[in-house]
Length: 243
Image 1 (cartoon, one colour):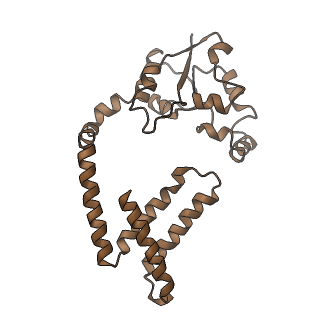
Image 2 (cartoon, rainbow, N blue to C red; image 1 turned 90 degrees about the vertical axis):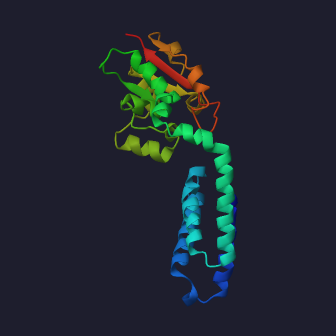
Image 3 (spheres, one colour; image 1 turned 180 degrees about the vertical axis):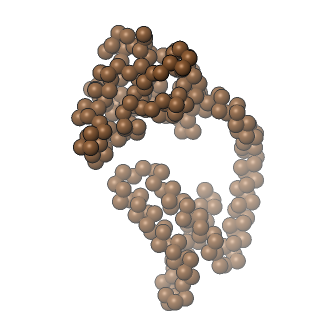
């Protein structure tokens, strides 16, 4: 955060210098970075959705500011802040970082992968089964199974510009969720978020069809390794069709 603040301040000071100089004296690389920064901010605001990950472009281009620093004081401040930040990070995250280097252990104990193993163990080895996933697409990835619907991001069901186009080209139906569930796939994956998005058609599958059983996965949902940001609403709602 300290480094980011410094880079922002350096960029602001550069803009002041920009208006004092003639165009011929402006560093071309700096000018290009400035243009990209402007477009990065425009992408965030003009997208009309305001998703935070749209700011990634801003972070990328503002980090290039350090390449064009000309003032010795700015360079020294940046180096000092890097050293301080590195020291704080080492003290706070050294043990967890070393633990994360054990990629085999991290992979095997990742909650969503454990959930995928539980689902897989409910079927005979090499048995083919279908999955309709409204959320937690990573589970489908671990199972190496395609989603029965062409929509893989839950909120895209509410994005008319996306949904209507997929209907128009025949990739999905007008009532995609209802139709997919009526086909009774072997596995249905929902979440607390999808219940909210698709009310009044909640994902209480076991109440709709008696052949489905809900898997109890509270232990994996409550795991601190499930998500970097704790989201109490995205509960696991996974139903298996009993043969």
